[in-house]
Image (cartoon, rainbow, N blue to C red; front, side):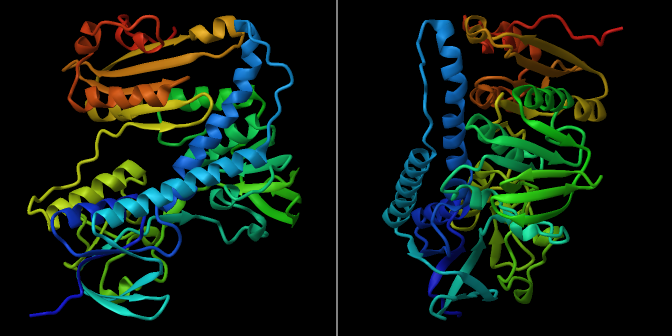
Length: 456
């Protein structure tokens, strides 16, 4: 019988790996997590959490501007980026310590080292060269920013990883990309006083989101003062940080202090030794897994962004938990992620769950749409042009709500609760029979009665 040092060795101390290790340890497994950077992973250290802190900070700019409409004097507010970064760093350090503490209290060993796979049951700790034998290996190394190496001068660009380490704010930034990261950084930097230009290949931001949301958010970005260069791409970058020039495909140039590339993240599998161990990799190096997170090698599993299934932190956590239940808890648990509620912390904020209008038509044929657009209560006294948009997509045959799409303040908070109803199969009648909470923006979700028809 084979001899093992561990029941479970996890490569990667992010959300998915940490959850898997803790749950496995709760089932009695002897587990170890190896992390070459900081425990907590992309989300906690250089992703969702610091981003949301910066977003909150940026929205004070609007609050100060709107305050006089409510009788407050907001004379000469002053923003100190150094103080914000120090507070952010302190909070991230606290969260990392909490992650480590939770692992240790669960009985999981932590090793601060890069780890690579030698064979189906053996890993190497690159810090000291030790090898360990594990009955099961879980790959949870997440993703890394993608930079197009063919773009001349790409080495002059930053990614979101580096942006969180900026000691000072640049006066001007070109943000390349229009997904979650690009849109969120463009909005928060703009509100912190940076001159922002967005460059992206499509005509609207956020591909694969509902078309109404894409149109409205693209317009809102421009109305806020963000320069948008749509339908183009970067040809090259030259100069030095602090004095850069970005050349677009049409030959025009944009002078800026920094270039922030936000063109997506790719699975972080380079140099892990997976292929040598027999693990099948797919496009962009993603680990190919089945619904139980199994790879082509029975003793090796993978969860989170490294699989490129659903690159969202809550998905990684769910996958890690399901893995531990399956392998160590004796409860085979396939990963079931949909329908997925998600938010984009742009300003205005976006929340969505379920099918887009186009997807619903393709999958269900006849659908009924309910839409509304209105000024939220805060905007009336603030005197701003802010609007909230809501859209419900309904299957005509069954009355089931197929998708809900929101744009406006607190959309992320609302969509979390709506996601429960959509997952449970709520009908439009269920929405209609729910009493409104008045006065709120969310009450519009249960008071829309008239189906939307396109203008003649």
